[in-house]
Length: 106
Ligand code: HEC
Image: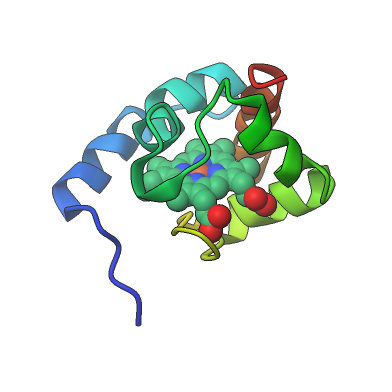
């Protein structure tokens, strides 16, 4: 069993903006609320948003693979938690966040 390198309190904080929230967050909103915690600075080997080199190699696998890994998680070079740990987010919102990250990383 894998232990995520982050305290549970921090995990709850990330998801707090979504508790009781209505659906339909934009990719940017989801990124700012959740994903940037790791993807702004590269916590735990996360590819940094805005780094075309880091993302182009991943994007080569195709968007479906990126969506799948964002939704179901990936532990290859680091640990990408399923749904970026936002259990309140819908799959559509997580996909929108992936699109947003890719757009900002060309
Ligand atoms: C706890 C830190 C953390 C959070 C929060 C997080 N990520 Fe990640 N993410 C990672 C790490 C680490 C990797 C690299 C995993 C690897 O290569 O094994 C990664 C990789 C990815 C990838 C690349 C997958 C691939 O196929 O190469 C995508 C896309 C992604 N994250 C999207 C997101 C989105 C969208 C969110 C917000 C909903 C998010 N992440 C939140 C840590 C995080």
